[in-house]
Length: 295
Image 1 (cartoon, helix red, strand yellow):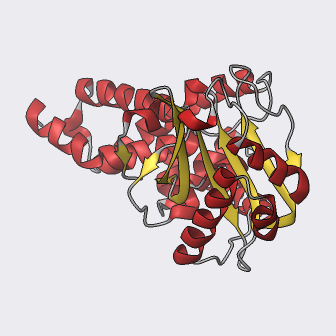
Image 2: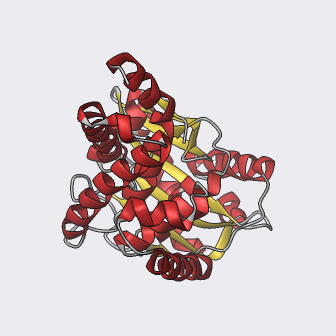
């Protein structure tokens, strides 16, 4: 296989490789690095013996992602406040739930092996044999890991039945109420036990523990319209709708920079049950770039 042909094969699978790595890592920057390392290994490999380039490349990027995830887990254990995935702008994924902030948070509670197996099996429909080759485990151990991961995810992340139109409607109403400081309208939209997760990473001031309860969460958001946030006065802050991780969300900007993203988890009855707010500037680069990912 010539260099040009090898590059063409890799480019055909690049979106898949990033999609796998991002779901395993929850970080766009780390996923990009994993894909780049996969390219280096692919370009220097003996490709004459590769019968299935897709499976071969998936194996490389999975191993690269797993190595990074194991190293990242040690850093996340001492992270300041809740750790949330790095948000990305997306172009209508076929399975948006699999890349949503809520799903990635659940995947964070799996072991690295279980996470990789779940992603390859449940999201991308790789066979147990293909996954076994990718993660260097027996097929039986992969089946067991897949069973554990599926049960864990099902227990913690039931699929909500809110339609796309309902998600957009509730999101628009929520942000109109939040930016307008309308506590009563917010209370109508929030589930009584709604949970707000804020990720500032110790870089900006955010809640260091989950904020629980409609009244407290409503007050927190209502203050956005009346108080300075991250050094940006309300008059200097703008908010625009965007598709973030496959779901309707909002990007907040001020003083020429992205200062936060917010996505909502919405129940079938149109209530907001969870809110994910990422404000750590180290995690906003992918959104600030304006690039949209096909995942």
